[in-house]
Length: 468
Image (cartoon, rainbow, N blue to C red; front, side):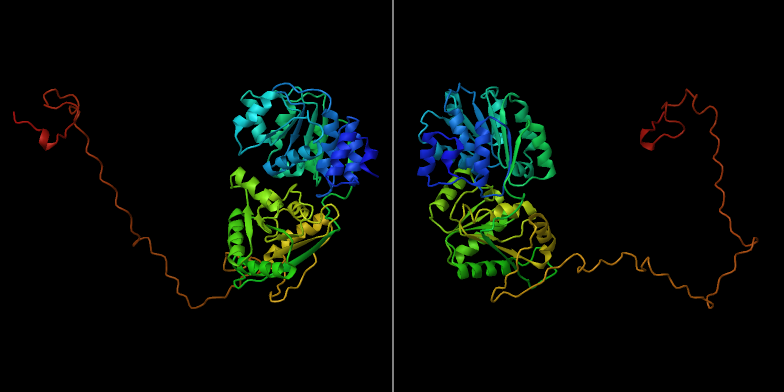
């Protein structure tokens, strides 16, 4: 099947051919005709299968006719992160190059709101936004939503992880029910399914692979490192940095993403790589948005080979020829593993994904195995001391706080040599002396009018006494 079989316009087919694509992916082949029909879609496919093009391509053709009004976008695309929103905007530029009248606006945090409002005032066909900035602009009165006829909720599972679902529900309540809703997610947990049932009307469900599966083009590997102080929580960071450098020297990647769980570890690993002669940059949520976008563009252009990042780069980052992904830390959420390694092995290319773990990461690895259906193959690395995972059964149980265990009976020994003192007799029993009775106050104490100070009773302080 080719793109020409999907019912797309000639101008759009030319733009797709210019981008170098000849055959649609399974999710694109199934979703594009349904979207062109104006039907709701519930799409689930593993990351790297081309979900973004499955809604941007038909939307361009749908929006080709008609004109937007000021502050009233005709379509809305919700993205969980700024990077994803910017990437979707780039796709509209790529595929809509021959639709010169098509206008779009990017509404994300970290950028000048004044410049974004100027674009909205001119009227836009496509509004690509993150939920927080969108609600901010709407509540300021700069945006009207009643003309939106196509809504796209992209990376819905990431929206759930980041806590955006209440904002998404509020945004949907502001839209007209006479709309087409496209709902895309790489995984489909029960919470996302309930949300889809709430937002969609008789949708066409499209699932091209089992949810949370990894691409067959990715070679995976697990390296379990030990650390000197095995009792220290969070240990093994130095050993993992040594193993990471050894993996990089062994494979010599064309380019690679290195994921860390914490932003402070991103900085540590970034400095370590540069100190050992590897040209690397970093990317995490605490960086200013212009700096983040500049770093991404340099990485895509090949200005440096290694980017140490947090999970802000785990979703939707599309670099087709990404050769390697390194998980410096095992992700605590199993879904994040699927999205991280999905940055490589895209569009049919082969990729490699290696995960560095310590013996204490067993429960996280079990969660990954449960969601993907396969265990990560263990890999031996020369010069790296092998270690075994510590399962729950292997961990020593904590001692009870009581000295005697509750499960063991306490032995009672008969004591015969202890002398018990005899109780005192009644004659020698001491009693506490009774308090003497208080002296009764004279009846005239409170009524004596001859006293120099009234209200003080019988006692008058010495410094108040006056000689009469």
